[in-house]
Length: 303
Image 1 (cartoon, rainbow, N blue to C red):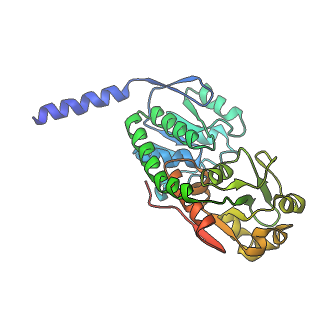
Image 2 (cartoon, rainbow, N blue to C red; image 1 turned 180 degrees about the horizontal axis):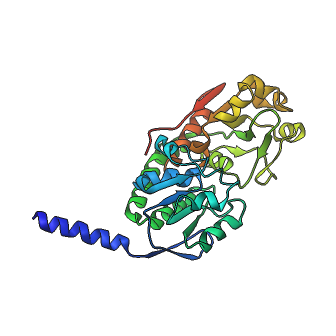
């Protein structure tokens, strides 16, 4: 009996060791020959890799990869938009995963030229985008079934949100501000992940007509007339909290600024569109519709 179980384990390992193909964000097929040494170039990607149970194969990560905590023990190859191929190649990766818009763009081409399998991960700020992201990464590491389990768990998390949305009679307008100190302030609109999460949580985007993120101006903030301001927790801390937020151009002249209605959520939790999408959207709904003043939401249990 033990010999039979050992043989099955060996055969399973041989199957996983065979090259397999995954379709990446460009719609191109990528052949993955080995998942023994993975480098992740994106925080959401790293979170999903650990949730899939292959965290022990990740040998490097980018600066935005701080969840789960175990990822912080890995070598940091730099921020996903300020990378160099040499630092990544020094870790001898067999597989690299990251968004297709890493910078500089030639980094991924250099990695491919060095014989590394590179999978460009889709990053659409929608629920379907979350499913696609999980499935792409799961296929890239041979954990397709586990990926479907993560998607089912995400769907279960969304049930409570859908129940609340069905009972909600009014909709608030939310404005997402990306903040990194008083001198680095942006208004984010359509196409940005936090705004996609707001819409999933039943909050209308106050920054209509704005694509991605643009420099914040008093005119844009006042014209948006937000009922609610949504920020990353670190961003709010960087400007001195709610009082610092009210000092930014135009904020005190908005309904949200006058009422002090602010939801602050951890960066990855709000913007990853990964396995915790349902939890994060529910937290955002609660902060918007069931709380007043400042509501701070953080990561839930680690995968």
